[in-house]
Image (cartoon, rainbow over all chains, first blue to last red; front, side, top):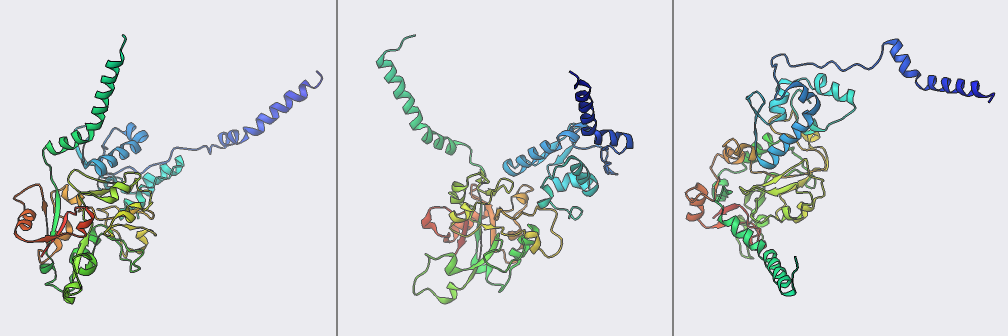
Length: 126
Length: 249
């Protein structure tokens, strides 16, 4: 039983060392921040509410892709009744025209690398 | 509920009959349904050859669809190209066929067959036949196995051994996606233009009107009138693929 202080002290030291990066970043104020995205200057409304687009734009794009390629259905009626063409380069990227400051910043932050723009090119994305 | 042997055999027989007649009933159902569009092309080789060395149909297609010029024949990307008569129609000639005819160049493209062998072999359904007859490609789903290339008797499909963008001079057109390395590509009868009620680019680009596009299901269409008025041949009819590209002679 005389080892108790030694064991507890060791555990505390171990936990302190393991969580050191977290404490260090909190203390230095260098914790990860959400990326600053360049929003379109001209257009205020997207094809779906902002919260939905933030979390589920990839699902929307996959649905559009299946609709256009496999079913030939090219028109989209948005939540606010506006009509859009289901077209990544023709609809999305005309407003979001800076891929590096919009798509890439967030994808880099989230650690995902979608392959859309390997084929869907615009003068801005190439 | 109990069931005796006689009833059981009766039910089993009825079920078997149902399963056996399902395919034929489906076929009948398909034919009874209102006939939709059936896109087809009629090529008039005589008109095409009046202007020697013209490749405007090819240029228009390739520029709009981002098809790169690759000289190496094993790597070239094929949507529409020119083929000598003797190679396009190997069974339509004999030892005495005129040499001038044999070496005549004809525009050839995907035949959008009624019975496409490429579709039958595709393991991922990346290529399939639409109701309007177009043999479509879904590049997102293509795994690059090249079974379709082996199945196509017309060489109308090509595999991207390399990123086609590397062979494109200049900036690609942003109106049409490029394709990646590792997928098979082909002509799609300009389905993106048909959706906007426009004719295929090769048809619009031809200064001679040698390419005519239209709906086979419409008996008053220009293609049907041409096919009624003139004798037509199709590539390798003996294979039973039923091409939708006709050549009138």
